[in-house]
Amino acid sequence: MKVDGKVMEKVIELKDVWTRYGNQVILEAVNLELEEPSGLLGIIGPNGGGKTTLLKVFLGLLKPYRGSVKLFGKSPEKSRDLVGYVPQYKRFDFDFPISVWEVVLTGRMSHTGFLKKYSDEDKKAAEDALKTVEMFQYKDRQIGQLSGGQRQRVFIARALATNPKLLLLDEPNSGLDPHMQDELYRLLDRLKKDMAIIMVTHDLSAVSIYVDRIACLNRKLHYHNSREIPVEDLEATYQCPVELIAHGVPHRVLEKHNGGS
Amino acid sequence: MFDLLQYSFVQNALAAAVLASIACGIIGVYVVVKKIVFISGGIAHASFGGIGLGYYLGINPMFGVLPFSILSALVMGTVSKKSKIPEDSAIGILWSLGMALGIIFVSLTPGYAPDLMTYLFGNILTVPRFDIYLMLALDLIIVGVVYLFYKEFLSLCFDEEFTTVQGVPTQKLYLLLLCIIALTIVVLIKVVGIILVIALLTIPATLSRKFTHDLKRMMLISTLFGTVISVAGIGLSYALDAPSGATIILVLSLVYGVVAFGMEMLEGRGTLN
Ligand SMILES: Nc1ncnc2c1ncn2[C@@H]1O[C@H](COP(=O)(O)OP(=O)(O)OP(=O)(O)O)[C@@H](O)[C@H]1O
Ligand SMILES: [Mg+2]
Image (tube, rainbow over all chains, first blue to last red; front, side, top):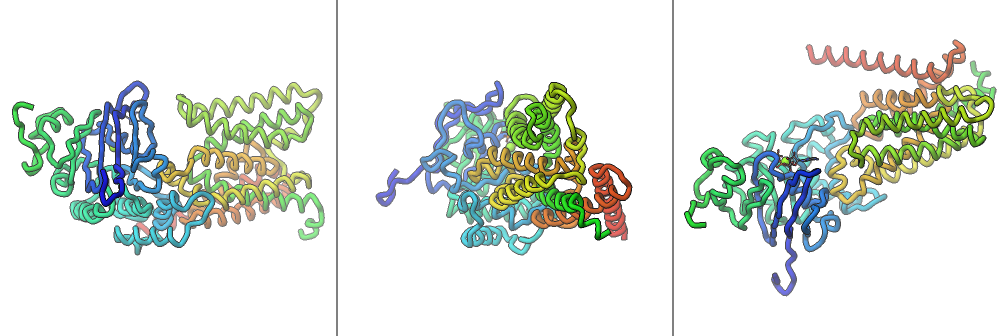
């Protein structure tokens, strides 16, 4: 695609990607293309459906045994400084001797390079990132001395410090109260002007409000470059009747069954 | 007491205490925060193979243990991450393999292996001048590597996966960390011996954690703790004519117990009121 005479890179291009752990196939023939501006893509799916695995494929942490992965026309390894990552909440050592400021700075390493000290530019980016998530006043706190929601915002700041063109978030809303979740979605809504965002979530009602495109993942990826989910996709993904899954989800999100297809 | 300082063995002992405390103060912090105490113990014990090899080849055992400890670190780091068996089992196997090799080498060595006990349990009062220079050189390497890779090591210890995503070759960096742990072990051998090394790698660092949440300050505090306590241990072992390595560790454990207990009492009172 060409805009203003310059070639637009595809943000993501996955072609026929298969991954497995041991003998167990986790992702099967996944294809995905995202073009700029891609807005906010929501990925939903059941536990164990392979959502985190898919993000790891984007990040180059996991090599598919078949298929190809390109970010911005390059391999994941070559696009480190373009991608921000907020991992799924994990148990970690609350006593770890690191401050909020130091955590956010680690998001700059792909720019700083090996054996160099963080530059003024790095510090400015870290400061801006902390201000974006409204955590700058906590910069000297040890990471364990924050609430779960505050810590989640620090991890978002760490990803933003990279100044990414693509932001990957793995269930960023888990552990947040409804108010904080709303804040998070508003933040993403602002950020998506500057970057492509992919968010894995179980929160279907949020998806229905904030997301521009949606994909369902359970081994196979169902994606139609739209914000509507065909009912049969949703049922295939979760393997249960749609009434159970889409409880409370506005009907405009769900595409009506149209018999034939 | 001060006229003791004119004896060169006392000077050497004090120098060894300071050099050992610097190495274990800095590296012990990584061992503790990255929770790699077990693999560090494995490297230390497997290094006994190098001591045996030194005796067998008729060279200074320190030159046997130096390459052998680095080799153990590389093998353990690679095998424990790459193989299908659980990490702790892999470490357990290599740990005993290294020791077994050492014992075989020693038994193959004709005659008697002098100072073998020194390598196993340490004797800071008999450290030769040459070993002091070796310890100094190793300390310089350790401090240099930590200075150069400070930000990478911090990120590696905190969140390995995210560090990889930032384009840092974490697997190699982890092996580098294990190698400088191996060098630290060589620095500590003459002070407390292979069997007791792990105490010096863990106790001062764990103690320092109670006083600060800053990694650099932890390194400073644990170095200070190590120095004060090992000097006190040397004095005590001289006065009581007890083995120096074991005495230092007894003093360390005692101080740790008192501080930990004292702080828990204080904190307990704080939360109750
Ligand atoms: N390191 C691993 N080794 C072996 N199997 C794994 C590993 N990580 C994940 N799996 C398997 O891969 C499958 C997909 O896992 P993944 O973490 O991608 O799911 P998910 O969609 O993110 O689930 P959740 O909603 O619970 O986060 C699961 O069946 C899981 O058991
Ligand atoms: Mg997951």
